Amino acid sequence: MTQTERLYFLINYLINEKNELKSIDIPSQERAKKQLLRSLMNIRPPKPVSKEFLEIQDAYLQEECSEKGIISLSDISPARPGIYLWQGDITRLSTDAIVNAANSAMLGCFVPCHGCIDNAIHSAAGVELRLECSRIMEKQKAKEPTGKAKITKAYNLPCRYVLHTVGPIIYGSVTRQDCDLLSDCYHSCLELADANQIKSIAFCCISTGEFHFPNQKAAEIAIQTVCDYQAKNQNSPEVIFNVFKDSDYEIYRQLLG
Image 1 (cartoon, helix red, strand yellow):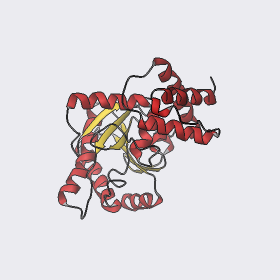
Image 2 (cartoon, one colour):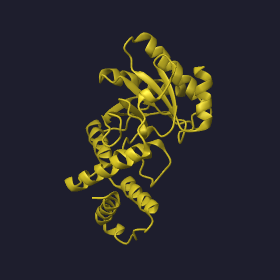
Image 3 (cartoon, one colour):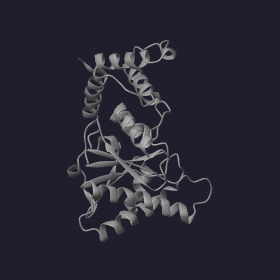
């Protein structure tokens, strides 16, 4: 099966799951088809899916991942002992774990093709990730608290695990509690990584996107929390600070010296 054939199969499968989607016209351009598939995956609720779908989805997403190019830790120069800085798409990293800036529902972003990292990670991992998150939340029977973390498989991502953490949402001025909760996000992820023998972890810029935490202050908290943890824990994971924007890269570059 070619990538084009896989793409067509996946789109048709998802459209045929719901009567209200059956009127959708499949575009002729490949790029538009890919956007449609991502949109259909984004809006799909966590529910059972066929083995055939998963096999074809996994083959499709793994080929897409390969085409983007996979980045390993050895491809990145350390900024400090045990700390790295890398700018790019976090879904390309083959570290032991990457960190997802989740929301309290912990099911991923349902907005089609939204630009948040939650959407990017779930889209690249495949529908299994939302299904696993749903099972976790069904057992928890409550929204995920801010500052805590959960671990899942990574499915079609090149990493082994995804750590999901909910950062603080900033509505006005940043409070001491906001800063403490953001620090808790990093600390919780590091503790969870240690508990699961994770040796390398890539952090996104938690809370700085849709949650509006000031980028400079967030970076300072991130670096301080990681450095404090590594100093107190001899075998703590190596950390990659993953940034996407040029402005964030410059902030981290200056803070890391």
